[in-house]
Every structure is written in C-alpha cells, then in structure tokens.
Length: 162
Image (cartoon, rainbow, N blue to C red):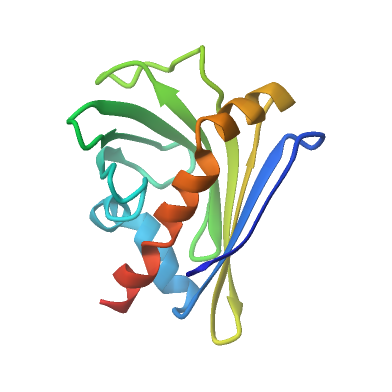
C-alpha cells in the first residue's frame, strides 16, 4: 500500500497523509494533470469521480462529482492557487451544493498542499490539508476523510503501473 503515514493535529488544524510510489514524480504529477487519470483515483473505489472542469493552473477551478454505489452524486470543487510542475500544487478543496458547483457554506473547505519529491528511486507524495478551525477538521475526520483519502491514494499504484 502506498500510504505509509497518516496523522492529524487538531491544534494545527491539519491532516497529513504520506505515500510512497514506485514511479517518478513526473508520472505522479501526470495523474493529477490529466482529468481522465485523476477520475480513476480521486475518491474511494466505490465512489468514482467525474471531473467536469479541470484547469490545473494558478487561478484555475476544477469541478467534480463522485457517484455513490446507489447513484447519488456528491459535488465538490478545487480552486487552484499555485502550480509547480511536477513538484506539486496548492488548492482549496470544498464541497458543492449541486451540479452548478455552488459552494456549500455549511461544510469545511480544506487548504491543500500536494507535493511530490524523489525518494528511494520513486516518489514520496505528501498531502497536507489545513482547515480554518479544529471543529472543521474534526467534521471531515468524522465524515471519514482519512479512510476515503487513503483508499483513493492507494489506487494510484495500479494506475501508474499500467
């Protein structure tokens, strides 16, 4: 399994997931840069993602939804701040209310830093999400973000091996 470490710190309002991949940082970058590849790994295996908009550029927006096994759609968005190809990018990840990707003000927004660095002939990916309050972090923890994100990240190995 690629995920090697998961920790959260309520005082710092952060969640950190570390994963190691047997592929170069450029290859891991490509997973996020290509919406069709990203769809295969964003979200748990039973909740496949569909990216409607994919603009991985500073100021870009990426709109997506995940579909449950019952066919229910859950909407979300990324607002991209910085891009440092192939080393990583930063973005806000939020929940949306509907198919118009209207921001949901009742659910937390995570400030994300995804970084990809060479490590032992492959890539160490570090995913850090920071929330405005400890309560916001606790809310996403209670919603299962650790399990969901870990199962999503663990799908990357099969994709890059293909």
